[in-house]
Length: 133
Image 1 (cartoon, rainbow, N blue to C red):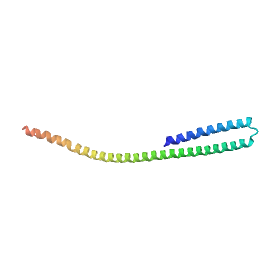
Image 2 (cartoon, one colour; image 1 turned 90 degrees about the vertical axis):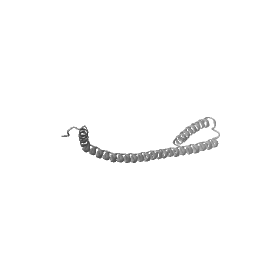
Image 3 (tube, rainbow, N blue to C red; image 1 turned 45 degrees about the horizontal axis):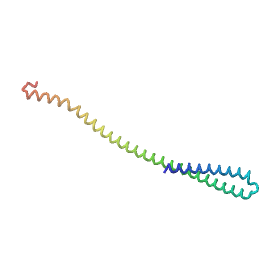
Image 4 (tube, rainbow, N blue to C red; image 1 turned 30 degrees about the horizontal axis):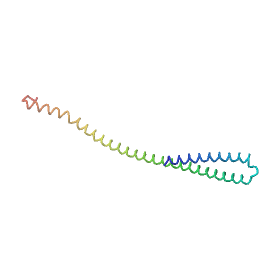
């Protein structure tokens, strides 16, 4: 949709430029060759002016629509970025909870691993018939 708005604005700008060129050519022509036809010249000037004003207003409207569309695109992008940030915050909170449980597992392991090692070592000595003390 944005590219269509840009295309409409460009087309209107080209049409406005073309019509201004036609008006200038008509004024030059009427100044040189149509001195006797003043009323016809004034009528055509009036038509050209009307068409010029019409195209200028259409171009202004098209430019404002293009700006509105850009604002809508920015709004949609920002809303999506905000949603992504909320998801990232939720993922971070879950990771923090898992980190806390991993710390608890690490503490339990640090407490019981040395005693497990000693008990296992003594058990194997007992099975081999060696004196424990």
